[in-house]
Each structure stands twice: as C-alpha cells, then as structure tokens.
Length: 344
Ligand code: KG4
Ligand code: ZN
Image (tube, rainbow, N blue to C red; front, side, top):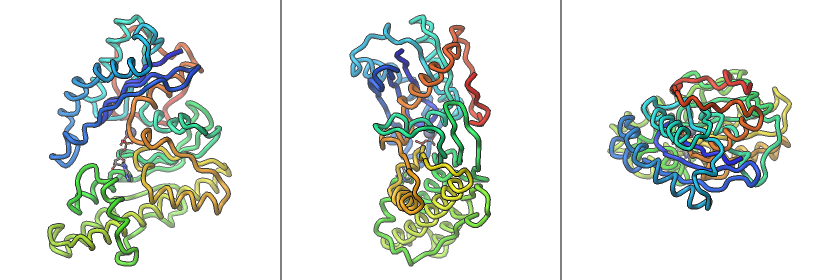
C-alpha cells in the first residue's frame, strides 16, 4: 500500500510517499523560514497562502523522485491538527480534493502522532513500548507509547513549550527566527559559569514542565544590561549557554524520572527541539549511565515534514483499513489532545 502524506500545520509544506512494503519512497519539503524571518515569527495568513503555492509542485517532485504516477497512490493522509487553522485547511483541502480526483480514500492524522512515530522511520527503529519526549515549538510532553494509537500522557508543560522558550529567548537576545538552532550554536561559545539560570520545576517530583520563568530570567538579564543592543557578543553567548544548560538539565532530569517511573528501557525523542545537539549529548550520557537506549528521528525528520504524516497514516491504515474515508468532507482540529486518539 502506498500512502501519500501531506503536512501543512505550520510553516513547512511537506509531501511524501510511504510504501508499507518498501518503506519511504520519497519526500519533498519547503520551509517558509526565510519568508517569516523578517516578521520575527510565523504570520499565519502568509503561511496559508504559501502552502497553496507549494503543495502541488512538491507533490510532483515527490512522485518524480519515487518514480511512480499519482494513480499508484492507494490512500492519502493529511495533518488534521493541531496547528494553525488556515494552514491546516489548505493541506486538508488539497488532500481531500486529490482523494476525490483520484478516487482514493483519505485519512486525517494527528501532527504529534507523526512526530511520535517518526523515529520508526530510522534504520534502527525502537520496539514498543517506549517513553517519548515530544519537544516541539508548540508542545512539551512525556508520553508512554505502547503501540500505534496507544498513548498515555505522563506529563506536559504548564505554560511555554521548550521550542517556544528557545524561540522567545533567542528573540530577546536579538537572534533570528527560528531561534532554537541559533541560540544552540551561540551557546557553544558561552562560558557555562557566567550565568546560572533557574531550572523550573526540576524538583517538582512529577513530570510537569514550566519554561516561562526561564524565558523571563533571560529577559531580566538582558534588561539589566539595557537591552540586547548593549550586550556584547561574548555575553550573548554566555547567556545562551546559561539558557541551554538550564533547559537541557530540566528535560534530561524529567526523562530520567519518566524512565524510572515506567520501568521502560527505551526513550524516544521527537519534535524540532530533538535536533538540539546539547540535548542529545546530555540524553546520550544519561542513557549510558542508567542503561537505557535513546532513539532519535533522522535529523531531517525532527522538524515538520510529510514523511512522518505518510508513515503515521500508513500505520493506522494497516491496523484499521476502514480509518480512511471517501466522503471527502473535512474539518480541521487546531487544538487536539493526543491522548484522545484511539486507533479503532
Ligand atoms: O517540530 P517542529 O518543527 O514544529 C512544531 O511542531 O512546533 O519544531 C519547531 C521548534 C522551533 O521552536 C525551533 O526553534 C525548535 O523546534 N528547534 C530547535 C532546534 N531545531 C529546531 N531547538 C533547539 N535546538 C535546535 N537545534
Ligand atoms: Zn511539529
């Protein structure tokens, strides 16, 4: 079975073809980062319009790379939520129109389920069950994953998501958008002893997170120096280092608690922040010390992409072929808790 995946929940348009026999056939991606950069963040209306422009050329690219025709697609999976309503509507409309034109069934997929299952696309995929840390721009959650569609929420953030904290703190330091990669690179040159920033909820004994205080701590340090324009490059790097060390400490400690609580031996990291080099180094060291294994998606599948949506759709259809429908009426779910998902 060949499944076309369509991702358009935020600022990346992704189209991909996954074959349940042969694996990922191809994927094509367009990132809108350059377009949103001058505004310092995603402009939803611009995002929607760009998805409209990009989707069909990306589909053609994905089909050409896979060497197949559109008629060979068996089903179409699209991101139904959560995400920006307008952006989701574009992907849903394109997926359902294609489904109708090609007479193929369509299936709405949860964006976070895509992230959660993305490490299974790697050459050495984890077995179920595992603990998953989902760290993206909009979410920070620890989940217990027993199989496709079997997710139990262990803990989540009370306020900002980890990626959001990266982006907002980077903005406070006058770095570009998205801030995650920029602040992470700058932190490499920072002095770890210069700023000891707070580690919110590190000792809360539960698996909840809170990052808005950390962002405020960065704001206070920057304000104390009269604003980002007055902070010299070395001090910016020192603040970046203080921020990254704090967030990595909290994420690592909570992952360790989740491994202890569940008794599981596999930890999966998913979502854009999972690309972070400092987080990966800390988790690898913790895993070696505590004798569990940590799995990451391929770097290109950490941030938003169509491959994870095609894959999640294919997994769902293998379990329940009735999950895809042919009435082509669609609705989107900009807010959609992952633990509401059930396979059948
Ligand atoms: O999963 P994703 O592409 O989109 C959402 O579903 O939100 O994640 C995007 C987030 C952004 O906040 C971005 O700054 C962060 O992931 N990110 C990183 C890195 N690469 C992306 N954060 C820290 N270090 C990175 N290397
Ligand atoms: Zn995402």
